Image (cartoon, rainbow, N blue to C red; front, side, top):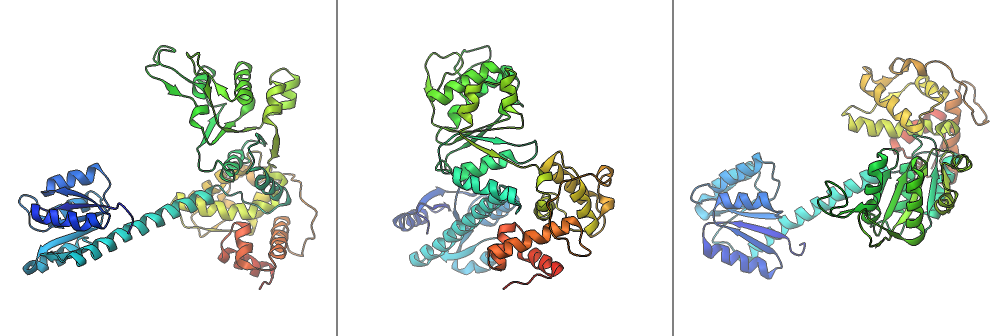
Length: 454
């Protein structure tokens, strides 16, 4: 039993409600009471309840009426029906429309406690399972997919840098996954339980950016009816991620430099500095040294931010990761669009391997989502790609030994499989985990390339 699980007793008999309150209260349950169906439903709508004890016969709304109403409103709280000994058939009927269990009156105290504990335990396990699924889903969405040498270096650097308090500057073209790297750095830090507050410096107008970053006090300007904390304060105890830092105007760069140096901010309209406790991560797709030479970015701010630097390679520099990304993205997009997960033809993969991918992984995801939605067959093929992907484009490829009949992309995929298998001594489950694919997909690819494992 979870301590302080909440039980709502809906019963018009005060004596029975008192008995339930004493028995369950002694067992560390929190007991709420309602003397009729209407007030019971009002309580259920107003606050979270773990278990409901519901009397079958009450004036006004009967227990069955309340149960039916709960069902119509989508309430999933376990309901234990209370019925007179001679009316068990009604309790059985209630179970057909969703009741968890039933007890007969007069209620045996031990039986009452056992049934309520069982229902509360069911609620606890259901919530834990739901929370675990959410956590797994979130972790899957924030995984960095790939097995190329370039992306492994990024992952290793994140593992080294993550636990530190040092400021990090993430460099990479648009669509390479800079926000994803920031998320990983935060999750591997000692601040992981704190907030990760993200600010896209390019998305906010200059006249709003300062108030968003530093906050303001009541009366600071027309419309400032109350104090509002800025992103620096909201990130307290956690991480502040400043995306597209190269788009900041010089006036704000000076104020951010002060925040980094002195660990204080001054909300608009205030003369009282506010202390901040945050770790800074910044990202940009701009060439900051060139901007410094042109007088568009402060050199002192650059060195404050760039204590540690992580460069994310563009997709065209890790073309061998495309098959893994396709597997991962098709699974993700299939769930998002309620479309069955599809396989892809060799020609489809080859076309992806020839493309320049100036929009990087974001562009690949868009192409796959379009193909998934428009595809009418069981396999994604060339006809599902936009025209601009069908023309050959020069792409740098790693020098690898090509097997007869293999396309360059298949060669890259085979080498990624072989290298990962060697790393994990042929262990299938660990290999699939490292590659970010299911064991079923791994088995298919092993069979395709004639690779054996233990």
